[in-house]
Length: 330
Image 1 (tube, rainbow, N blue to C red):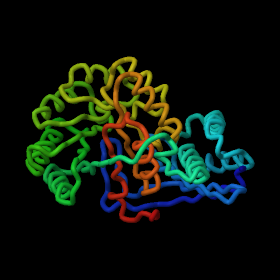
Image 2 (image 1 turned 90 degrees about the horizontal axis):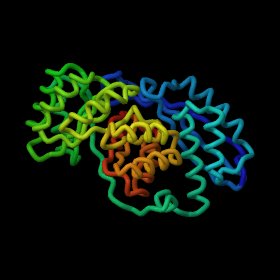
Image 3 (image 1 turned 90 degrees about the vertical axis):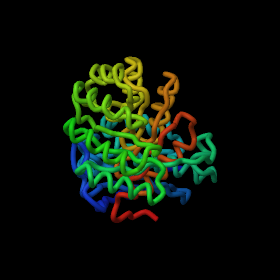
Image 4 (image 1 turned 60 degrees about the vertical axis):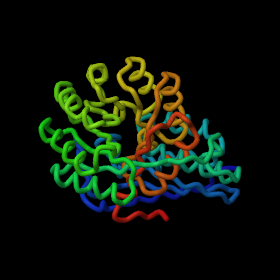
């Protein structure tokens, strides 16, 4: 089997409401979609969701990278995924998000050839994957109302975006806890918004509210600060923007700078690299969460299959389709 043609599409998907985090506001989610055709008639599909403040790629640079990779992959064997992933990484080592769409499409082709759902192809089984829903940064009362609304709709966990000033972040968490009740699971994500003193102050204050974990409290490059917070925080720490690939996971965990790692396909180059990240985390005796940028149902489905295929995944944050006003995927 050989790749015969690759179609590339750009999509702008509006949000239901502007989604604010510590490092930016999203009003429109932007993705590249691929159809990878083969000479056997099988077609694989993939998605690369582009959140530039984290991944550094824009729709324009991703489209240029995708056109380059498409030209190089025509005529190659799509089922030799290890070779294709290595080929793409060698050509464009820092375009993790663009590469993730191709990786996803290759796995789709292999699953169709084997007549297996992806989780089974990857050696896993069907198991529950229960996602949270996320309250973006707003005034405390607005965030509390949204969290209560998520609970009323049946979500079993709410993730709360923080990362501004200490007093307002504390007020947000107190208002949300009061709105959802004492026993409802809450998680927080600072998206690199704090420094060490502010992170320690907030985490010590909200610990009494029974918080499951805090994601990426400080800037992605500052592993020493992440470790300092991890060593002093009463709330477990998740490394997110600090970990793109398995090398990053090794650096963070060898410093014992986090309790968990958040793996995202658009951040880690796709499923194959995601497996490597999860294996490094498992080797360190830790667990993963599976997360998302602002993908459509396509990217979320691929992530859910990976999460179902490995026991390394403990937390699931696959909520972005609920935040989109328009999703092109059925």
